[in-house]
Amino acid sequence: MNKSELIERLAERSQISHHQAEEIVSLIINKMRDTMAQGGRIEIRGFGSFVVKHYDAYQGRNPKTGETIAVAPKRLPFFKVGKELKERVDFKDGDLSEKGS
Image (cartoon, rainbow, N blue to C red; front, side):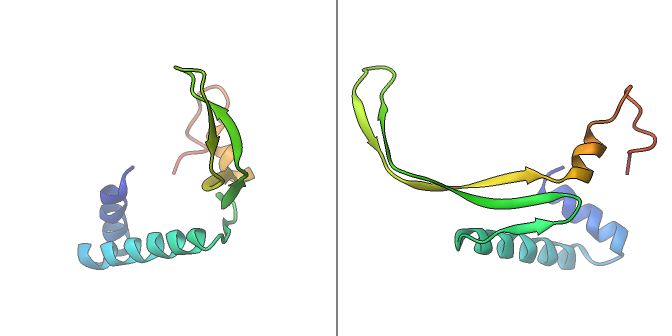
């Protein structure tokens, strides 16, 4: 599912206009982006959490030339899956009937 499909599904299931659904989805995504840009954590119970991992600077190596290069410190977003989502995705015997939406 991509962003456009999410907007369509939200509009249909909530009986709101496409424009309203688009505003809601954009608001949520923008708030999540802003929170993570500030180093914050987002937790959605049963789904998972979005965190920012900090990586220190280190000496790397260019695989083509073998040259040593300095890699700057960085922060990257990371998603940690929640227990309920993990269990729902890890269905047994190909049976989706109990676990499906």
